[in-house]
Image 1: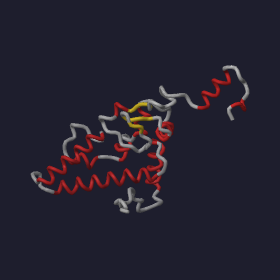
Image 2: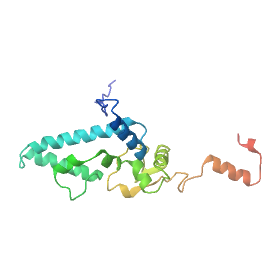
Image 3: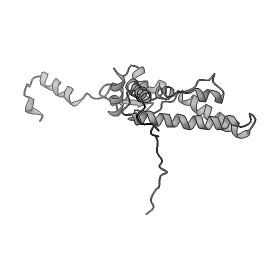
Image 4: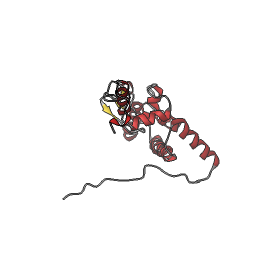
Length: 190
């Protein structure tokens, strides 16, 4: 029997100074504004941004005509445009260095569901996603941190079988309708 091995590495990096007041306040504000579960979600985005900026800085030290800089720089810019962090006018690596954590947090599915008014609050958006009421295209997505691409953004909608959309109503709703219909006995379906 063959065992599949995965290449596991940490997806976040804890802060060097754990009790720095300004950073703690800024992280707490981000958690509240974007409805994050914990600060690890902020640290994960910070690590992604740090890796991206490091790659951009390294490429910027190379010569402008260097084939590696041309190839890898274009790949980085194309990836950032596809997820919607940068727009078409920003066509240089220098713009990668100006990116902020908020730019990436704006592209999360949780934020997009709230911005599209499918949810009443950012926290409600997280609950809807976890309870499998949201789809992107034809695929139900239940990960709130799913990064929505620009071309997928217009396909965010309620799931077809969701009780909030056109799907079958929930158990409590059906029970209340049955009780209104004639029989007032609550112990009937239990």
